[in-house]
Structures are given as C-alpha cells and as structure tokens.
Image 1 (cartoon, rainbow, N blue to C red):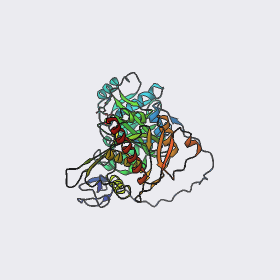
Image 2: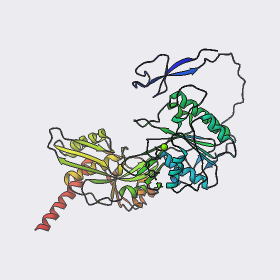
Image 3: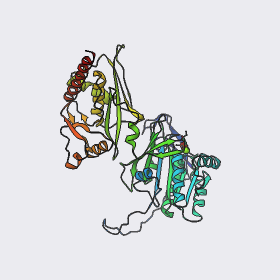
Image 4: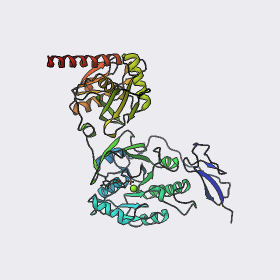
Length: 467
Ligand code: TYD
Ligand code: MG
C-alpha cells in the first residue's frame, strides 16, 4: 500500500505547505498551520478526454424553482426562496440566533407540507426539541437528528421522499470518512461540504450549512467553502441589542443587496417589516446633538439616528470616541468642520453614537454626523422632522449619494417633511413626490451657518422669555 503523505494546511486561509511553520506565508496568521493527512498519493495516469458539445448563451433556460419559507424577511434575502439543489452557507457569531432562525424556517416550511430535515452536530435532539417547544413549533413535522457523520447523513437523507430542505448545523462539526483529519480542520470541512454539495446537485434537495465565524467576522475554515456554495448569508447583530440583520454576500440566484431584519424576542426571531420605525422609536427629537440619517442598508432604505456629544475637555489630548461609526471618518469630518466650517473643536471631547446598535458605514452618513456634531456644539436642536444624507469631501463640499429617491420615499413614509442633501443631487419628479422638501446645500459652511442661526434665534427667544 502506498504510504500516506502529510501536508500542512493553514486553518485560516487553507494554504498548503509541505513543512510546518509558525506563521502562514499566505495570510500572515500566526500559529494556524496544522498537519493533516492527505491520504495515499493518487497514481497519475495519462487520460485522454472525451470531447463534449458546447452551447450558446441563448437557448432554453427555465427560471429556477424556489422553496419559499413563508418568513418574508428570510425569503427577501435569498431572492425569493431557496433554489432546488442549491447550497447556502449561513455564517454568524455564536449565540446570534442561527439555530433559532433555521428551526423557525424549517418549521414554517414543514407546515407548508414540505419534507424538512434538521441535522444538529452541536446539540442533542432533546435540546433542539426543547427550543422548538419554547418557540411553539413542536407540532411542525420537521425530521430531527443529532449526527456528524456525512456519509450516514447522506444515506439517511436519500431514503424516503426527497427532502425540500436539509439543514446542517454546523459544517465545522461534520466529518467524512474520505479524509482522515479531525473534524473542524480545513480538509474535513472542505471534503464534507463537497460531499453535501454533490448530494444537493444530485438529489435536488436544498441544503443550508451553518458556519461559525472567526473573531474578525469571516466564516471560519477555508474560504473555499464560500466559493463552492451557491449563496453566502451572514446573520449579524449587536449582542446588547435585540435586532438582527440577515444579509447575502454572495447569491448565484439573486441580488446581494437585500437585507432582512429580525428582532430577537422571548418567542424567537420576529420579523421587522418596518425597521426605520424600530430604530427611531423612543427618540428625543427636541434634544440637541441628534440627527436622522436617511441611510441605506444594501437596497433597503433605513432611517437611523446619529447622536453626537461635544463637550469641553479637561484632558491634554481630547477624546474622540465612536460607536457604530468609523473613527477615521469622524476625524475627517471634524477636520473639515474646523477648516471649512470655522469651528474650534481642538479643546473639546467628541463622542459619536449610532442609536440602536446600528452601524452607519456609508459615506452618505457624513452630513448627518456633521449636523449632529454642530447641533451638540451650539446646543441648538435640529428640526425634528428633517433627515440628512450626503457625503462630505475634504474641500468641504457636500456631494451627492446614490438612491436619493428611495431615501426620500422612506423619509416621507415615516412622516419626515424635509431632507438636507447635496445641491448636486439629481432628483426626478417621482423623487420629489415623496412629500419631503429637499433642502440643497453646497458645503459644510452653509450647514454650520444655518444651525448657528437657529441657535442664535433660540437664545434670543429665551432672553425674551426672561425679559
Ligand atoms: P442560537 O440560535 O442558539 O444561536 P447560534 O445558533 O447562532 O449560536 O441563539 C441563542 C441565543 O438566542 C441565546 O443566547 C438566547 C437567545 N434566544 C432568545 O432570546 N429567545 C429565544 O426564543 C431563543 C430560542 C433564543
Ligand atoms: Mg447554534
């Protein structure tokens, strides 16, 4: 028998070397290389290929049949349901709610009469049952098992009626007999995923693989799994807050811009059809330092509140702290406000927070952040029914951003009456019909001047009250 070879595989990026080393040359991660058994060397045989027919782009193509779960926020992200025979990877941090989401999706599908199999490699059947009972899903005819052996799982799934959906929770716990390394290693994860992928294509069942993520948010194990599967979804959220967001970073059967919003409740994940209302709930519109951003999450408009606090500092080097916002962008906005807005912020601490545990990463958030900062510094609250969106350039100019129409429509729907935006923002008649008055700005100087004017008016008003 041929002697088996050892290879050394980086558990972070999947790079293969022929000797152990402390740091991976390819991804620079320390201590990530593990020895794995590559199996006996395959004999290389000269193989003459058979020619096959090539085809043109036009021709018969059917729309892929889809399995609709009935959970609208989920179906929206997959592009209208799972495609038969497709494999989807669902990544997310531990405890974020992946298993909860999937057991709910399985139950919803089973209640529509489909055969659904849920394989847990992490929890015992009793644990899954307990959760299902708590979520009031115990009556759904989901077929459960706790197993980790891929060959056994595939044999089980191949008997009986074809399953519409098979959930594998999680791919890191699976192992296949075709390779010898231990579960969770790159080789095992890759081989298990490959076997499951073959089963999906062959049987037409749709498979969802749950994947753990590393501390920097990537699906742990080899990136190759992401390349193999048809769709990659990630389930995100802030542990301290209740809302969760499902987004697609890859989808061979649909767009990737859609996001789904859920709220974790005592009874599992509830769909949030109107996230803007959730994020703006409990807002104190009369307080200075808060601006509403008409933002976008993928293709979906979302209004979120950006809060700023600018206060005189007692420190030699004033503090600049952000939550849900990029530190470098804040530094840039402050520099532009000083250089082109005439503000003096060198002796002030600056805090910027995006309410509700959201992140505002798009450039369109610049204008809302700037408005919140100026409002906090001057003590003048911003008009309560006004939204902001626009990018700020280093020259101080306010620049147009994409999806102005969607942003205005969402603002109108939530009762906002005006929107501060770039003067260069192109608006068509439909955009203007949202009932939100555009208030175009050329640069940050104009923004500062306007907020300062309202601060002066406010002070004069107060003096009159006293007099
Ligand atoms: P879970 O689905 O097990 O997370 P994952 O599979 O991503 O690791 O979710 C676990 C968390 O969700 C747990 O910490 C408690 C919370 N949770 C609720 O708040 N309400 C519920 O109804 C359920 C089932 C879980
Ligand atoms: Mg889980």
